[in-house]
Structure formats: structure tokens, C-alpha cells
Length: 239
Image 1 (tube, rainbow, N blue to C red):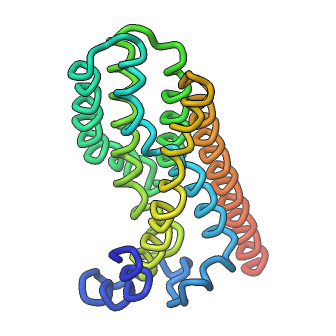
Image 2: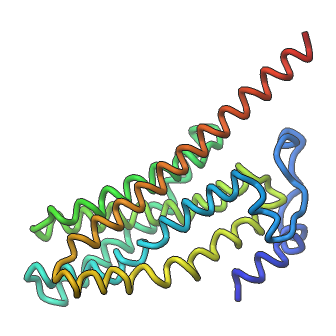
């Protein structure tokens, strides 16, 4: 319901809660669009696809990590402590990772790519984890990157689509939670039951998250190419 309201009334909410877009952001798209019209923009469609792929495996680290530890022989109480590590790291990631976007001059998409790739690699590395220390390290890395991704997504929307459209695009991207995330954890559970192992599931999720990072990297290259072409055009016009 909240996501639907953000998508439908995002602009009205934003008009009363956010400052107007500054003049130096005039090159960004700030026109108001209907929800379905965003998919006509290639940059939004690419980001939506990447986020959809990433979110498919997002809840698996929450729902299945303790069970994986139990499969390795640890008791349920000890296994559940992995979620404590995940939660603490998640809070730190929300606070710290957006700061790196500021260091890059507001290029938050680059940091988002890093969180996608690192989260995917960490999940895939679970197949090689045996000790509880290694499981805690992976839980910490996953939590840190998941927290950073949460904090960065709205900033990426401002970067790519303009502040005026940030709320609406953020709400539309969050619809991935309703779709992809609803299937991800049950699918990994089914794979575990069929294979009697989490290895195929961890590799699938890690591969999907890394693929999402590569898709976003392609979007970053597309944006750079567009900027270079625009700059060359302005220079030629001035000459």
C-alpha cells in the first residue's frame, strides 16, 4: 500500500516536503510522468531490471542463513546470532556507504554497483564457509552492503531522474519487493529440499546479484557516453 501511494502521489508529497531542484540540475529530467511512462526511459528500465534481479535473492540471506548454519552442525541459538551480526552491520552500512557517494561527487550509482557486486560475491562464498567465524564475516558483509543499498537507492533516484521525480521512481523501484522478493526465498528453499544442499541456491543468488551489478555498470557506462556526447555537442555549437 505504501509503495502504491508513493508511485501515485509521490510528486504531491514531494512538493510539500522537499526543496525545489536547484538550477545546476537543469540538465536532469524533472517533468512529472505517469507511472507506466517511466518504462519508456531506457535508464529507468535498466535500473528496474537490475534491481528486480538483485532483490530476488535479498531475503535468502535473512531466511536461510541460520538454517544453513544449522545444516553445518551449529545449534539454533548460535545460528540465530548471525542475524544479530547482520543487523548491526546493516545499520552501519546505512550510515557509512552513502558518504562514499559524496566523495565521488554525488555519483551514488557507482557505490550501489559496489554493494550489489560485494553482496553477490559474499553470498556465493558461503559454499566455502565451514567455521562460525567465516559465517559471521559473511553475515557482516551482507548486512553492511544491504544497509548501504537501502540508503543509496533514493540517492540514486535523485542522481538519475532528478529530485522532483525521486519519490515516484523510488516507489516504483520498491515494487520489486512485492514481486521478486516474494518468490526468491521460497525458490531457494525448494532448491535446498530438492538438492539437499544450499550450494546451488547460494551460487544462484550470488550469480544473480553479481549480474545485477554488471547491468548497473552498463548503465553507468551509458550515462557517461551520453554525457560525453552532450559535452562534445555543446563544444561544437560554441565553436
